[in-house]
Image (cartoon, rainbow, N blue to C red; front, top):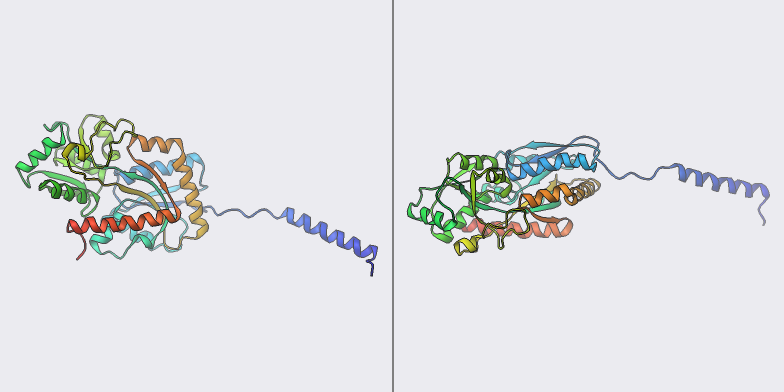
Length: 331
């Protein structure tokens, strides 16, 4: 049976109405923060993580990659446990992120605090940080061999400063002791900035600080780098390529790199996690951030997704092995 002209007209009107309605409905907007985002640093002020976080926060605003600012908050207590447990307790929250060092692994392994990196939502790895053996420029040691010889002559008389106990700096110190037959007095501080200040003030004899934590004092002629804990010289980094590796300087292949990564709370909403990954990728690719990496001898090491998760699992196992050898695991 043929449709009447009136039915056809009604059908045309319905179709037109549907088309107009579809045009009028705005496309779905991707998730964005609706309030300032807490950016937690599980370390003290002046250290490598603090320096990086305080570069990222204003850069996010400068690049206009978030409608809301990042508010930097230091929570260094308990070798970072305060910060980790704080973020762990914000389950499902979409307005908190945390920058992590390798104390992400070392703190729970040493203290038994109820936290594991798997409790958090991995977002992105921004860099891997180097470690350098530093002495005061007024000390007589111009090369690592000279300093090691002096430490060997007086076991237990030389003070090695580092950030926290049973963290990266102490792990490296123990590696040096075991490989070279040395004995230091290890002196822990709350952050890398404080560590370098104490070296400048001659309250300790050496440190194994990150480059960013001592670069200002180095440029001012207050501290001297003796060796870098990597498998090759930092020739890709501006001004750092002349420092020999520990293997070159001391004949022992002692190397260690530290995480600079970003995580969200447990069960962070998927759309929020995707937003922060995109935001961080844009920060990482910016000219200012890339210059910061080169100037501070940080290895550019962007990683996200399943590859980041796989790397985290492997790195946790590496720390278990290193800490077991140094007697640092929780018994």
